[in-house]
Length: 536
Ligand code: KIV
Ligand code: ZN
Image 1 (cartoon, rainbow, N blue to C red):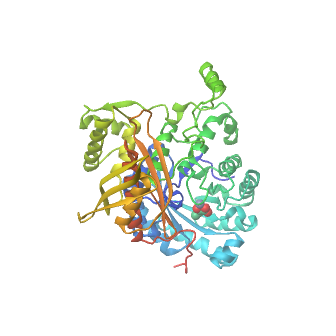
Image 2 (image 1 turned 90 degrees about the vertical axis):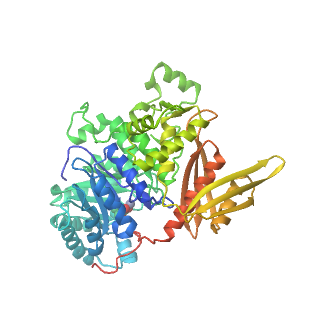
Image 3 (image 1 turned 120 degrees about the vertical axis):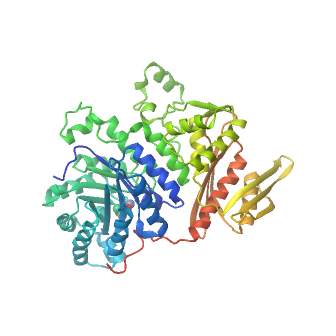
């Protein structure tokens, strides 16, 4: 049996596999904010990125290693293909963290070997021990993954895994890269590895999986029963294509159904010891932060973090819940930190009150960021009577962490109504302070604003998604707008909040344009789609 830490280790890959979702790219400040929140959430490992991808990715992993990976903090991990250059960059990027890990991988399925890598099985058997051994010269903690393991020949997997462990890998990860497997098949694969790999007791068995058939979480839970002790997952389940296994669903399944899973850990069913180290009360906040910063909107019926997950619409349900919560509710909203949306501040609150509440909410801002957040707070307090925690979160996540802005929205003005053609006047300032104004007509006020912004930025973008959501209840609530646009096949998102949704839409569009412009400067390597030419 694989090494058993006595509970499930949560390996969060929101900043690596999650960021591989189309349109979800994050800048350095945003990655840092998410990593800090993941540390508060209590994950065991943060996969902070793929350092070889670009200078920006390297810098982000390095900053997270410097600032988030404290002595008692999470392990900071970087991804590297099985190549010396990747592994070297990874080792350098994670170096500042006291607890650090190199995660290296190579594909093991025949379909990947033949069509992607153009290698033979014998090549893989040579590369794996060499690269794991090299990684161990840079970090004591090395994880090895067999990409597309779920479609690999199990006998070949046993051989590869055994070599990786002998070369020094202390975590072996089994990915279902294309989300193809089913729970019983995946459970059997994990069981087979536990039975047939002779040195498996020297490593922790981990699983990683995508949600193409909506089975990722179910597959992982079956794997846990067969001895998997590390789960690789993302917040809100974001990730390539249909996404990765959702952290919040796994953690809450293991929390709510602890007595069912306890015996698989050699515990009595009623043992109260948690099965993960995650602080469940931080789940909602983490979900919102990731959604706001990546622009990946959470579907309302999403388990645990969707807007409807704890809403009891029907009269029958409400009656039952009022009599006894347990009739229709298996999770108390407070367990995931939902019920707490205190009205905290108002027009007369000062800077120190705002700072104190932000600190209580877990936001430790720099002086400049705090000044900016306070200015935004004052502006909002003039328009909205009571400022809630959700409002403060919207202000911080939206305004303070903008990418290095090429364009600033200076003015937006619209005229529309039953008798008017929707017309927008927009002024943008570029980074040299030069102002440009234009006027555009549209099918509606938002369309007119986007057309005006496109013409000023000299772009022709396709608006893929425009979603508006109210932050809190009430007529004076902030409206949160998320925009996704496409240019040359690439997707970019922008997010903003304002009491005026047209202003929020304009700002969200400008944020997306700024991301688009900054991404044009870099052309990051994709860890799975771009193939290593030589193992140098
Ligand atoms: O899906 C996958 O196989 C991966 C590996 C790189 C772990 O993301
Ligand atoms: Zn993946």
